[in-house]
Length: 295
Image (cartoon, rainbow, N blue to C red):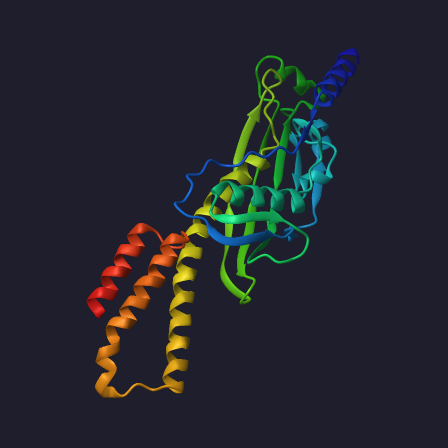
């Protein structure tokens, strides 16, 4: 009986030593573009699309012949206890993820400004999205021995294991024209760790997982914005040409005389896109060559 009581006390003390964790986010490193896009980006709070399911079955590990107890959380910030840590304080994924994204976009130096807000406001582009998954899974090993399994921890056997998953959907919208630029679901690599009482790992790795997702998103954002700007310019050119043709049609005999002027206008617009950082040097040279060959 004494040994059983000692085992229970050791288990309580070991699990009770779990420390609190708090949200701290560090942005990725980026190379600044040649030119900023003279537009603003507003990041709205993310919607929460996660399952509403938190299950703590760690107590089952202390039933004889059960190898372990477990935790499965779809909203892990709502629990005061995790396998290796206690309460996660100052952590609100809906806002913290959005604020971190605004910091990331600012760090890219791609736009005039990027900021977090609860409403669309006067932003030229809108970034919104939803948290699809932030699963936390953990096991506390008792090795079929109930509380006596704790003794194995002290001779080098693992005390438990955890995993973190994160999936986020992000959408970019042209606020001026109310057009979808792109929408994509991003999934970070699963974080897994085994822990010993002599080396307790951090089981709150969501800032690092989000950092990985935002690295991919900002890369996509840079490419999609450039492509969208070119497509938008072509559309505007087509509309303008059609309107001018309807108002003042040019006789077929002198259409050829106006072709150099059309080339000049296109080259000027191409220069402006390059100056604003909307297209790369390679895209600029390719389009310039295409225009010249066409005319």
